[in-house]
Length: 259
Image (cartoon, rainbow, N blue to C red; front, top):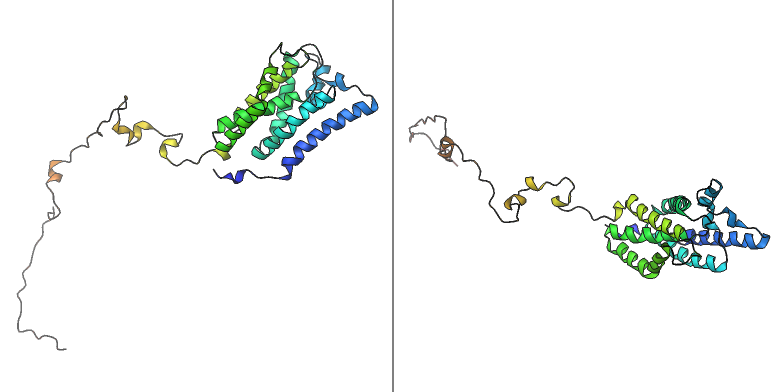
């Protein structure tokens, strides 16, 4: 694996910045023109509430709610775009979709709004994907994410704070874990150098592994069948073919070439 998989592009800054600015623009529209977008959130188990699956991440109740979601989104979306550029847009899109549907299924009968569900998707995906990849830079990223945002896991359980949508948080957490298993990152896998690292490796056919029994004790290789006796008596100087020799008399009276 070569570290040139990690490339800084304009999207590393542009994607999180555009997403967060759009959240603030929606909130400004609501304040400026007196709109009430709360009713466009997820209302569980109602047909009209399904619109919130797509709209709720962009709706926030107040500035504190918006700010608390904006800062993690800036960091996590930038990390996602830099380290998982190929999977980033799919994780964002499917993260919003499936976490919203799950919230619609398990949520309380109330409007659920805010981008916190996406925050939980990103935290879960980045953490578990780094651990599963076993690549040192991604593992370090996972540990950094859990140090910064590990405490948010408590808000994915009921009775911690009735004012928040713990159902949306739990749905985002579950969705992120599932996506970390669904989306593979073969570009971060170590190249196969040895036969025993291959998926079709068979211990019973390997000459080295044949020297050990089931308990790991060293044993000799199976004896090679003895060669037939008729062949074992043959040597380098013998032949099965008859050889006839002809003796030629040396003629001394032959003229020798002159120099």
